[in-house]
Image (cartoon, rainbow, N blue to C red):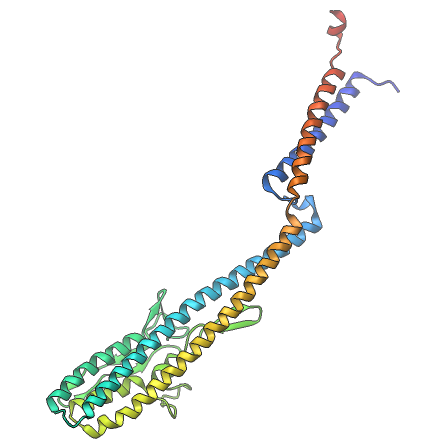
Length: 314
């Protein structure tokens, strides 16, 4: 078979094209640091990398869930701690009011401070974070506690507080098949009603009503009722302390799962690197060799296809 000039040129151009393609692919690996830049580079490896990336995305989402849940739990614990301080102050006022050295006028002054404690307790129960109420369950747009009526001196009466939120506790996923409580049932925490039947459970107290009754007892100079309020305030303090313990346990649980997710993320990142990352030393070695090979090929082919009719006519 006769080898024509056109065949030589086509063959040379084909070799050059393949050399440029190899160099381009190596340059892409060097620039990206990845061995797999498209599925066609390694279909099996690309599939494995995709699964690992999905695992990383899921892990990142779980970590964000934990961060948001911790923020809500910390805010809820802080609100309960503040409410506990309010009850402790109310107890101090009740002790002062039960003292025989007090009179109707001084007890009336103590009653005024209890009114401010009642308003502060209502504010803690309606605490918000990120635009949502902490103790309203899934109805976070609604203030969970609504007070009806003002404080009246003659005859003494106090506002009535009703629960208008959702008693459900918001659950957030923190791992596959694992959920954590992000909120607490405000009706149980502040009103002592865990089952939602409208009645205070045994050993618990409606904190709003307890403060209201103390205020009325101080306003009417009713020493026996002031003394009786001490036991109710102690129950309320115990009630809030128990709720704070639950919040602390949840925060500890979040820390444990966050550490577990950190380890999982490191493992997934390492495995993804093993699958898709390029061997940098090898890539740059190949890059240098291919650049030299392409330059040599250009020079050889330039000489090979140089002779033409004009060259013979010179």
